[in-house]
Length: 364
Image (spheres, rainbow, N blue to C red):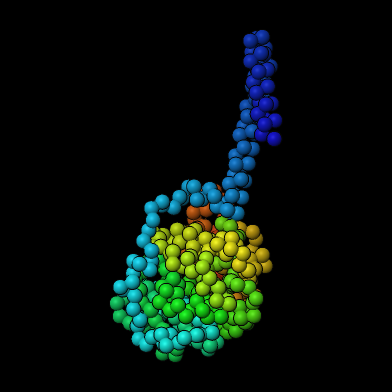
């Protein structure tokens, strides 16, 4: 509306300037021309602001502009389950093979440039085992030798080795395909190794999952690029993984070419599927208690999460203040994610030392 008024006023000033010029009123024409130029520039600036505002809202709420600019390839990549089958194997004892009806199962997606298992993954595995979870570590580690644990491997852990294809969703799909009993468990956690920690007991967080009445649960959620549960920790209850919509989803995981493709298709895509199929969702720590709309709580809100009993930090914070999705948003529109993603990210190590007495570099 305002843009239209300014544009009409600028057009009127142009007409007046032309009239005065041909009437030999050079001074009046000059003034009218200056008014026209000012109004035209104001209209252009207003249009730019309106466009940017629409762009920001679209990027934060639905990311429709991102999808157009960074369009995913139309060709169909191979299915993870079909592409890797001959190379998937159990390392050590297959403890889950003889379990017919586990009550609790946790699947941890692991990657390393060699064969090392970080202290964080080892501690998470130990804690889950202590809480009566059958743990499956699905590793795409690049090292050829057996996994090297920083301490004796926790009892009751099954290790699956597979090619590095399909990212975390490929690892979870592999475990669900190899062990159908997992989908039949009453409580299933799908986790990855993107967190450093836990630096203190997580019994209270696990209890929130155990006590939840929802079908699907997450440690945190976000409205960055559309509302979704963050996929580094997802919980499924009451055998929901056996139901047709979710079974199809996991069988359909493909070998995507980039992490961003995985985020769009599977992390955000899974939450959209859950909403579409009317599954009930729950979250341990709601994004609104940590960050503003459109922000990532595990990045911007890392300190507030620590305050709420979340004894982890994203490993990304220790490597870089900005992740690939934030950089894509910044390239799209600088106003989408103003400033640094984690402006106090340089304080993470010091804060963890102060709270927990740990040197976080020993955990990654």
